[in-house]
Length: 406
Image (tube, rainbow, N blue to C red; front, side, top):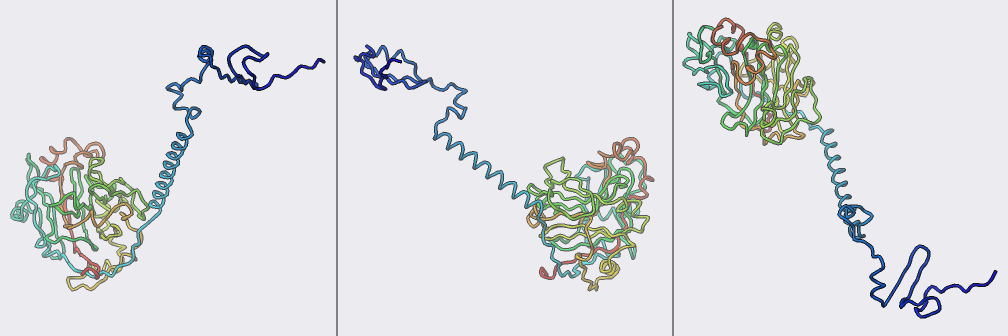
């Protein structure tokens, strides 16, 4: 084999290896040319600029761009991890309901019950088909929508008028006192029910709704056969999508009145917690605890009252009972403060008792859910006898306060 002199990596343009005015290097797969000939330089291909779509492909990014993008992705992932950790922690947390030492402060005796209340007069602000009577009319024998006996106080729907084309007479009373916290006991001997009825025992500040919140302790519509509904209605930033300890069924988790047509965050009790079933069992006692850790609502059937509750509702104003919710077992409804600042959402709560007819809830469910006959307002106007069960019979109410706030 004849020897062949290898070509050097760089060679002069005027050497025996070529006659171009250039220096060249051509390792395998690549050609490098430096030339003083502008024509030759222009004829060599140059690296094209990235097209529009290529600018978004990491292959064409500069080192600086890759560092920036990587940092941004890292920050986003960190935020997601932190948010998930916070959400998981909130979902598993639960307030400390440390037992409080309670003392009975206010007793609402049946014989003097309505002396502690003022009467709301006029049409129903929730659209109910009723006239709420003043004290003068409510205690008039013609309507008799509120009256008392030695052992009971009554709030009822008028059962005399047969052509009530602008609404049937009823009553709505509001306690003179307002409360920011504490424990409430309500002895209910008979709960109102029947087509078109919308009864409630609830807490709110009527002058500052919804700013100061609403606690529906006892509420339902029409026959009430689904059980008692206990619900909160608030301004924004109050949610019950958290751990809860309750026996009732959840009916809404967002308490904000501006969502879901003001459905609120509710809990529904068993069928014997309201209506005909409750009345047949002799009624019962509803208890509501309002404190910074949360709001809890219990129902006790007459035959299974805790000892301290039984003593409290059967004792007069000199009662020294100290009710202790920590011994009552699981609440029917639990609204913990985990994702709702109870102290800022609930203030100046008055006790309200009323029976509305038709309206936003009972009227909506009148035909569809409860299968009541005809038109709700026509039924109310023309059927006085249909409301023979539309009355509250109430025993003592007790307000019990933590001794640290006395």
